[in-house]
Length: 606
Ligand code: X8Z
Ligand code: ZN
Image (cartoon, rainbow, N blue to C red; front, side, top):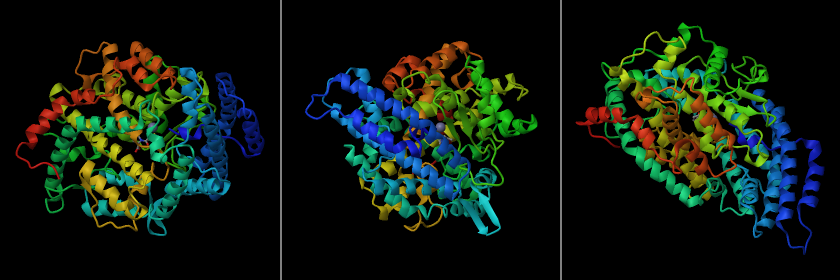
């Protein structure tokens, strides 16, 4: 999702809008400001923001779809202007800090103050520099390729496929280090970006940009950080058991000299460029006698699913639950395949260009089961965006950012063997004796991801606060990779490298805690929606396909946008105001038993 692209404007309007904003929105000196002034300020600001958001979205869309020096420059211009206005509005909002406001007005005021993910200093030169750095970092990632010779280049997509299927230690190592050459030049740019944005956050009253990010969760920022630790504590025993088993199997496959059984796992052997999801090495760890005997990638190929058909298939799931079909423009304006003749930002994203129904996705789809899930993920964003499109602009967001990331994944949890049979992809549903295999595959993706999704922002928060200095960027990254995930770099790294930058969200400045939350939330949503749908099977066999009741309850939450604290949105589906990993643990309970049995004579940990 691209929430940061929602608010923007075009170059010509800027000067007058800024002037208008400054004159109209600031109460006259010596006059006591009132709630009425605040309402006027909110209404005028909203108008400005709505006007501007469409143009910003278009500039960003064009940049991401045609990555060149010129589109970078245009996107940076729009971005700077957009940021400057929001910074001005956010700082003007402070005049109402001590005015008694209705809960609704106070909430809108806070949304305005916290809107930016990359606040800029109130100095035109610095703000211009920050916008240029952002566009340059985005561009370095989008154009990234690993070229062994000038005519032999691999894109990230090429490397992703090879990492998923290769079981050759040396080949994997080559790909792993090759992609990390792309991020080395980002390092000095990233350090400059941090300094500048911290100055911006500071001027808005936050200790640093990380503190600002943590303030977006309807609870004190420190409590939020504690809450994350609590939830991670719930999942850790399951993760440790999975880690132990996977390391043992990798040891059998590659030899214990290459995968020492008392050390973190080498990061290139887990089937994914960042070792963030491990489902692609299912074949290495598959439980004996419990293999479900099918593979979604192969089923898609067998039934001639091309990229378009994959997206249509995902849309059908949503419509089966009662959601309206996507608009025709979605199909004509989206990008589904990687163009051959130009650079595009291939990292998947979902967009709403007009804050109504100009919905689109942009994705270089590969014909795999993994990408089929990502399509559901992206459509979840689009259905959410459309559900809240009648709310005041301030509330046209998810309950918190984790909710946005959770919706499509929740639906994808319903892509069960039973569902695949129902839509004609699978002939026969494997019997229950194969469930451990299915759960293993799911855990390799969902459980393995949890510590990764936590550590990315643990690193960034410390970078923002200065606890990690630019001289320690890479070492600190690997310390956290070891601490949380129990993985290690397969070859020596040093401070000329910038391995965090090899992950899209770091140069892209997209907060990552949202995915941690989403992975906890999706199991909670799945459990509740299955109950609402009247499911009688085990939770991992439940699909809410065709359930209008589940769709209705889900839609009620989506329609709330961010108008109420996320705790209330959560309660509206699950009945509880607290996030909790129990739903995930219950889902994987049979697997935990299996893993404990497998691990009983093993020395776990790292
Ligand atoms: O970035 C994404 C989505 C777009 S919001 C494709 N995801 C994270 C990632 O790829 O690292 C989805 C799960 C985690
Ligand atoms: Zn997403």
